[in-house]
Length: 195
Length: 195
Image (cartoon, one colour):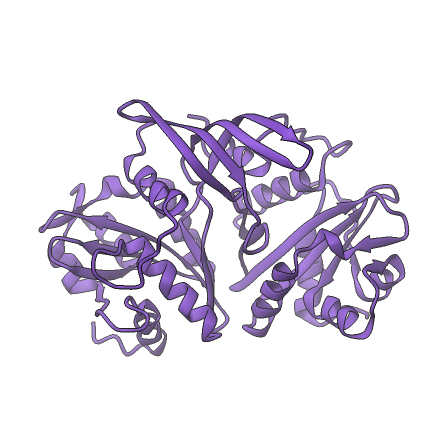
């Protein structure tokens, strides 16, 4: 069996099995999975993508030790896609891409995911969103408390990119990993965020 | 794939949605899920069971907004079943039942799950196993470092119940939740473990 990387790849997109290790054309999800793999290899952090939640309706057992799922449906996740541990801190986040050049629609995030990140933050975890504006090739990390500030002070159904520039953190492209988001978390931890 | 115990649990959680809030006859998994739900309700901890990892081979789209998985297989999980946050600490564990009255077979735990818990512990998370001896109606919490001590000092393929009595913590039945495992974690945090 192709473990462990095979399993992770299975989790990461389930359907597409072509994972490109070149930055060009890599989806945000694949880049984050590669970064997490790199962090584990370096013994820096243990952060995983959760498996896609499904509801199984029908399972066949053609032989004693083999089960085949014959009918199942995707279900709404209760939490976020990624969580784990870094420097003793509980880390929890959701990652989303948008083609828009001007704003990030809040329809991309389930209200219960925001609620979840709020709970995490209140319990001294580090909760955030990673949002990529694919057309602009810009990737931001937005801490949950900054997102909540937006929600509390605005009626808008989408977050303008100005808000990301003001309150978020740009995640610069790097070589290894291509998306070194823990570098931003280091800044946040140091309180040296320049915001 | 020879993955008996995981499949059994999967069927319990994904197919049957009847969660019994009565202790009698409840599986360990259902009890832990109820406990986690209770902890969330009390705003005490945010710990979730991860979805069962599967590999999707075939998906149909009978209508635009509905996907049906027509062929999928259970895969070996990369990590453990449960993780989350409690008192600012990253919590990570695996839960298993055994019918044996004398020992817990290490075949129940994948080596990479032990490796994962070891990584978590080294990074200042709290990693452990919850093991229920169903015939004896005894449930233990065993910290990963105690499990590692066993593995480092014994050639045995199963952990005798004596070891659980000596190094583990009994999780006493309680009313709400029926399995109050965080009470044991409180003791561990206080260093008041009497071991």
